[in-house]
Length: 518
Ligand code: TNX
Image (tube, rainbow, N blue to C red; front, top):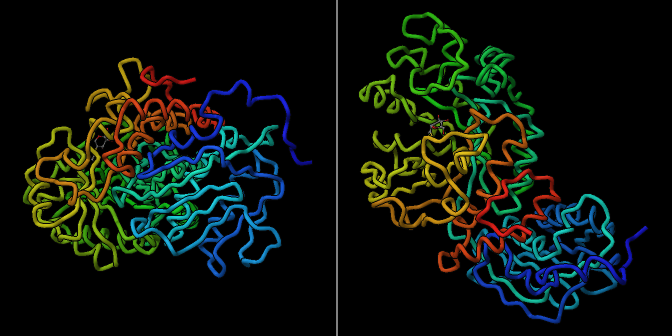
């Protein structure tokens, strides 16, 4: 049975923004240009159809995704039609081409009139971004997982929208505690709603090795098996089939996975599994504590480079995206000279297997190729090596630990997380400008922003959600929205409207006192 319009009910008691035009003003990330046209709302009905660009599988996929998003709460059938022929006009159209030139390869334009919603973009990614906006233009109950007895209005108006930065990412640490494929998929769905388009997976570290490698078959089952992880309770690893499935799932949400194999430090799980990788040929015991900076691959042994090449080759093979992250952070057990020697041999291997290098900002000290992307994770805004790299035309990814680290506690009472980079309240996460943050790294040298979530203290999906929400939406807005729209007062008001959406999606978020939640 279809839910029919009700006479009395939720509408009467709802806050003003629930009435439609106001929802134009609550979209996160804020659109570049949004003009409501009050009074010409579109109403979803049991007869609404979703039309997608004839002949485009990409558009059809986004159409199916949208239908799956809207069916549970509406109970409407919402058929997806790509033939371009349907007896009734109107409905929701996802079309490619004929866009405003500002839209670019990730943006979209959206128009809502009485007869329908039209999203136009030049790519599937742009249509997908437009769908995320449409989702927020519907009442919060659209996030419910069963039919809701209410009307579904989309406020009339027009939006032209495109991102400030091409790369808007977040990172999950599967090494310190393994997170299952289902947990990672749930996180992928959560982040897609905020137009995040990269997911960096930290797959290896001292406490665990989480990806199957065929040429070193004991790495994952032993280095990532039962008893591995912080305090020995975070065991598990991804088989190649599971990893491929995750990458495909992310791609279906227009999210590119960036795999990280951290080296030459953060490698105790590999060193403990294969004795021959150690300079003295003796395997150290596995480690489950939270120390950093004590392990190193053996720089002067040939087998090290065979190992690294095998791993890079196999991981590159699993990776349709452009980047392969080689870590390179906190190599305190490696001398500067050895670090350079190691990176001089390892960095070319990434290109050899068709990928671009990403690495923590330490890689900027060893003259990486201009195509490499150093990921800035410092807390003070000065880094001469990163600035030099930018001055030479390179692009930098920004993850300043005192702003963008989702594993920092919100305040001294936060049960989870660490505090080495300070407390990060929602406002702190929001109030910085990636285009001016690092000295000598101007906006044009910024590839984008990424919010890493290290999981020394995190085990469950609830833990992940609590640390990521609502700081991740803050970072998503920094990455997407024009700086001219940046405004804390506006952001906190908009975020408050997202509380019910997060709740209906079962996201266990931090109810920051800085936000006027309803
Ligand atoms: C520093 S950030 C690390 C990680 C830790 C993190 C905890 C970085 C490149 N290295 O090994 O997990 O701090 O916040």
